[in-house]
Image (tube, rainbow, N blue to C red; front, top):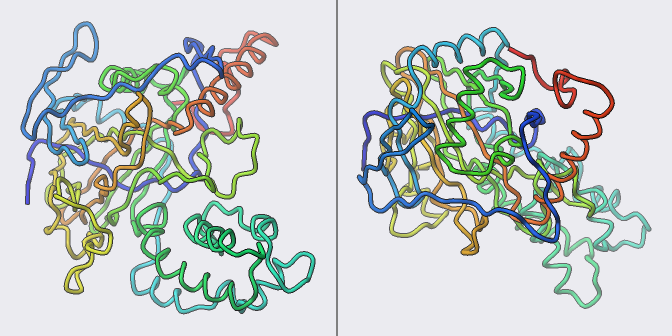
Length: 429
């Protein structure tokens, strides 16, 4: 069990793809050609646990960065923000207004799992999906009713299992008996995979803060430091999610989960959906890395925990041992491999995905499972900055080119102070 002192952490995920759309500033250069992708994704080397390296954030700003873990790559940067800058971010969040986020308790979730599917029998579900009423389910019939961001009746994992079973049948169709068996089997594993992504349990209050042109100068400085820290191209950060600020009160927490999502042919990234020509079955969040900021020092509790950091191996079934669930931070926070105490001004950087070996984003790092321990005394203020990247680099390029074209067209109409209207997305502060 490792523990780090000066450190930094955050709260909830902010949901699947419900985040406000970010808007590029007028300085972003987004001329990207589909046929020739112009940049790769830099990746900081961890070297070894405990290694300290000096990082230049700007011409006159340097910080020390310590490696906390290699699986996943986690770095701690004390003094990333000043106490005054932290105070301003908290005040901006309070001025914007925070929305309560609370998912059902484990008892409630267990009770809900006993309810029938959408209050319908499996026969009734098949009858609704069976568009041609031949008593069989073809692929297109399943796909036509499966698009759901929250997996209301069919999660991406369940869908993949059903489609794989469908392809294995020479008839190319499922009978009612087939559907009942496959769906029941897929749901048993979905209960865990769903919890680890965007359906995990949490309780906090949060709000999104826009960081582009016209926003408070502290928010713009913070974004520039993230660019300097990660060494990522400006346009990636410009087009990523706004800053999520989270307030944890006494007892607030988030269970262990993944900030990003595994990718497969049945899913597409929510942030690039504007450029998605094909019909995707499910939209997921695609976050290459996370940068978290502690905006205050917590009196007791509120640590960020990585339950399986630097484990020799990872086995999802091994998360439950002797009836103890390591993803349940309310009960097992002390059992996590790495816990990081919130210290004001400290930042954490970790990669949610591995490299594909070609300079782009690869598979999701299973070791990046993380949560937030319950606050025992005082308050916890934290913020998260995510960098959204599509694992399909051509899809990312098309998205960036599309946004660039819209920006240029909008700029040509009038001399706007903001490149694209975003009044419905955020409140300038």
